[in-house]
Length: 269
Image (cartoon, rainbow, N blue to C red; front, side, top):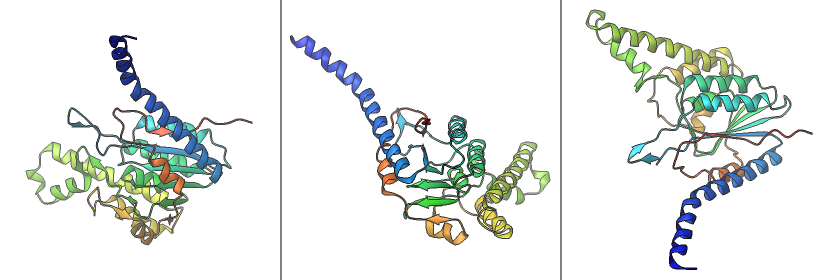
């Protein structure tokens, strides 16, 4: 074999290495998901959005809950037997309210137990999904976050606070429209959270907790610890399976955008 042939083999191997590595990681994840399902007797769904260091040419890529995720998750839930518990592993900074609400409503309607497992963080829409669970299982260092809506890059609560400091005659139509939308967004998300929380606590407490989570009293990235969430009355456990933490090691930072949901095909018979 001559030198040029070796060069071409090296180039081919270098080009194929990322593809082979990705396939290997996918196979390892599927085996780990299968292991967790067998051990816990449940259907495991994984929603992971890794974005901490992702970028192309220095431009950060944002991963978040979107309609593609909700479509996939809803299909899995619909194809899961009513008597099969669901273990939903969530690692996400949040995302579209529409997608998160669809997922949370579907989880709430599932007849068997639903457990949301949070190995590191489930912020914003991820927390809204967690509120639908019968039990939220967190790593002792993991965090949830407020569910207050954002209009573009601006917190809805901050828009209302800014508008309240000026006379109406000094505000233009666009600002007033944004304030109206901000008010409606807060009411809608707070109502959704209250409805989900009603499964875990009485109506008065559900209303109070929903208001705390949705009304913008914290910054949107405020980390709610397991202890603080427990004090609110959320059904928190910190007994997260070691297999779930091991599973997260199989989700390294990706180099391109891909679907965030993975699950095993339904087995018949």
